[in-house]
Image (cartoon, rainbow, N blue to C red):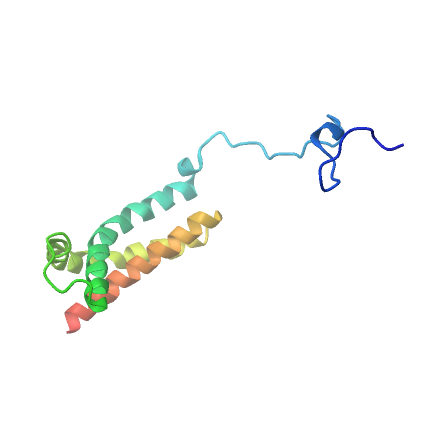
Amino acid sequence: MPSSRPRSKRGARTLADVRVGSSPIPEVPPASDDPWIETRAGGQFFVNAVLAAPALMALYPWTLRWILRTAGVLNRPSRILDPVPAVADHVIPVLGWLAIPAAWLVVRNLRIIDRPWARRALWVFLAVHVGTVVYTVLRVIG
């Protein structure tokens, strides 16, 4: 026997048609007592983030300045973008060689971290470390 309750414009059931308890509530896995960052994998992810921070601070302004100058947008010296690369020129050689063990740690941690967002961040950290090493090697060679 059809229900006398109103239907939506498309003929779908409305909230009034759904009985409470007509379908089982899906099972939700129990929450862990420890936050993820306090697990072994989360702690190693945090260490990787800390190791990538100096390289990001040094390479970001340099890359931004290079992109803007290549595109012809920045034709004159900039008070904001020029001092940071000058400092980075002194810091990058040290960071470059320290990025080698940091990159090894990222590769090692890619094997144990299973969360997709953490794995994407680790790939970014790996690219930062490899970029730092390549920049350092190119600076030493040429």
